[in-house]
Length: 229
Ligand SMILES: *Cc1c(COP(=O)(O)O)cnc(C)c1O
Image (cartoon, rainbow, N blue to C red; front, side, top):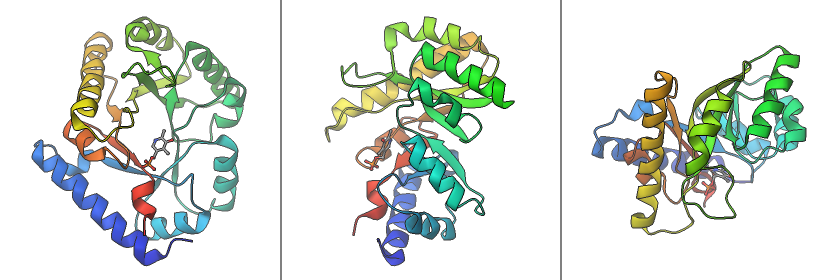
């Protein structure tokens, strides 16, 4: 288990770095939400973060998330699904998550729409875009985004709130920054077509969140940096 003292120190440091990155780009630090990614730690660490004021938690496996929701149901927490969601898990995800960051296909969109309708809820989602074009990555191809997006906006029980991407794994800012910048430009372009419904840009993890904030991230998904000794 990671000691509370360590988590507290890391959280303060991360918040400071978000603050400074926002200032550098003349953005309001309040416009950036931290999603604490807890997939690799236990419920104890979640409770520690909760006591430090964190309310947004990201998980990448539906089953693990559901177990945690159950055991922490007394806490007032917003759960984010950030990992790949298989179509056959759409039913389980509907109604359970505050936000799905990884809507990566039309097929999943249809499955979520059906599941949310049956559950009597709206599914808030971000459309995942494979900006870097790496083959192993999930998400819509940049070239298919516009037509895919048009299809997804027809779904009555799926609400599109923004875009999400993962940058290539490299510490070279010259590779990473254009990926984040492209996502912002894609969002702005889609917003012109759909009247400004897309607010969020979920981008930036431990290795690159400051660049993401500088390029307009409204949500950063951070795991490792919170729990390092
Ligand atoms: C694990 C994960 C993160 C957090 O990554 P860290 O490098 O641990 O900060 C963010 N987003 C997604 C989709 C993840 O799976």
